[in-house]
Length: 430
Ligand code: RM4
Ligand code: MN
Ligand code: MN
Image (cartoon, rainbow, N blue to C red; front, side, top):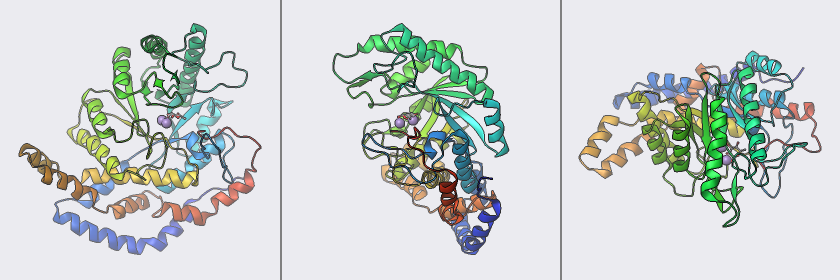
């Protein structure tokens, strides 16, 4: 029998924190009432927020230099799901799992699906992998995949994506996410226009095979692994491609895939306006694709992104239905703690964005009053909504303090016994 974090353990921890939480919640409720805000409405929104976790996020990541595996790391997709379930039990916001194929390819999709269902989990987006070679793979992706110069390599990459779709249907997934590492390391290596033409032709084949009711997401990335030029390098190219492909193709924004200082909230607003925002891979970064925990470096940026999202949500823009996912690499923290913390930070930004006085903001904009406009945003951003988040988790059966509850549960130590380290393991982003 494998060790599980049970509801009684969470309830016991919550009993310790409930008194002070109720005080703080009542106090915040009175403060918000003075601003004309109903705390209960915000708590309901917090309880309804959902973000999916990546199966690859529960393993320790790494850099080009090293990977330092943690104790009790999951060794297969079932164990990954066990860890994802813990994040869900602690936060109650993360029932969706995004799988990476072939890292998580199950022998029996039906068995995996019922394993997930029994835990209240479901499969969200599928992710293909043509950025590395697999053992016994006939052709190499060293010089690209969907945009490769050799049609046989492109075919192989397309077929891999078709296999992901087929598997996704069996698992009950509803979208497919394509990120490729294609590009050039040196000037002249790749013919810029021809590579994009080849990519579009390959992607057209994947789009053409998209199952009924599915959406196709494509993810741009400025650089890495190609350091000079990347085929889908920014949101403009991504937007062009999804427009070319058709109405079920959308641009996905991974926060770490932009140059430092880029105004990502503006990219988000543009994609919303053009009806092409797929959703997100949330994370944070200082320099590039650092894959740090959401909100750890630029919490105000995260808030400003949610400000755009909530603005669209409140306006009920037709077709606005972004998919929220985490995409992080945990190199020095416990992956379960990092994922739970990020999920909490997203709900925080979401609730804070609901605190923006939108009528007031729009007046300040119309009167060209930048100082008051910024202050309106800052009033929302600087409100400590922690008690709302904790109360929402508590009411949903989650933990008032997810990290403390996880630490006292002994889950990691138990898993270290149940899952002895293996010599070589492919989990994580290296
Ligand atoms: C990439 C990108 C993809 C992720 C891989 C592992 O940088 O963010 O979404 O699947 O990393
Ligand atoms: Mn990503
Ligand atoms: Mn990335």
